[in-house]
Structure formats: structure tokens, C-alpha cells
Image 1 (tube, rainbow, N blue to C red):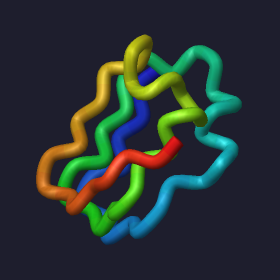
Image 2: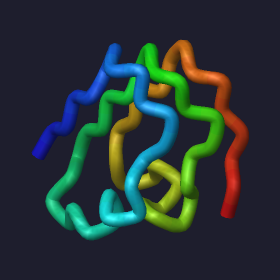
Image 3: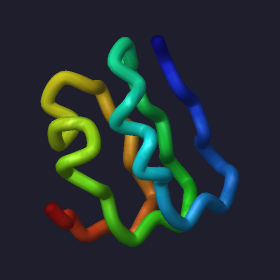
Length: 60
């Protein structure tokens, strides 16, 4: 499954993002994210992530 929430001015991802077991691609580019919840989906290791143009720090 692919999830594209790009260009939506999202400031945080919901904790439930980790419940999407079939998620293979997450596009959150051009949002207002400041933190990426590493523990929620394995630090993007099994999920392809597009996080371009966010001001991220990694928490976990």
C-alpha cells in the first residue's frame, strides 16, 4: 500500500501510522513535520519514505 499525504501542511504523524502493516511507501514531502516517530514504522527501513522539504529531527 502507498500513502501520499504530501503538500498538506501536516505538522505530525498520528501514532496509528505504525498500525498500517501493509504500508510500503509513505510520501510526506512538503509538509510541516518536525519529528519523525522512528519507533512507529521501523525508521523507514521496510517502508520507502519521501520526507523532502520537512524540518525533521528523528525521535525514538
